[in-house]
Length: 183
Image (cartoon, rainbow, N blue to C red):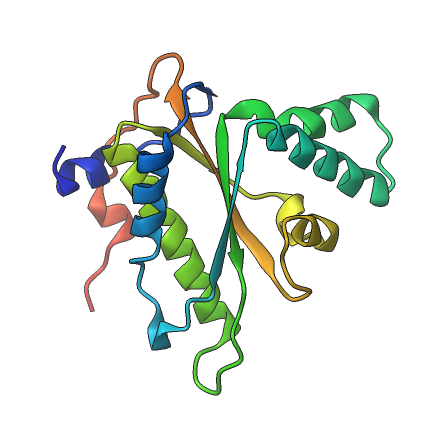
């Protein structure tokens, strides 16, 4: 698949099953992430790979996060516990901002988002399905700490990866004039 075909046909897929990316594919996906634009070459990203039984451990972290917020609804707690089991592998992309007089934290967060997007496109090019998720866990200090993040870190996204199950949803072609203007 050409780079243009990958870009024009990328689509999130909510149903992801085994197998996930193998070691060589994961390496390629992470190498692609490291090629993202990064003003000042600050490398404000940290990636945490969650696979196998560690997905269950991440589910336990999500449950603890909800309990710390006072949630005790069994259905919500079960959903949180099962969330990481929706794919065989997850890459958590964390912003680990670097103090810099000219490059704001927000710009560094954009670099992490670009890195996760590059990882998602690399997965697509390899034939691996993906879904990018965020939600309340992304900014929860207890989740970030459990992932090995520092106090000021933030999860920019959880990239779920695996084999697509079921049909690919069709995406209509977007009319450019709805989103593009010329100055």
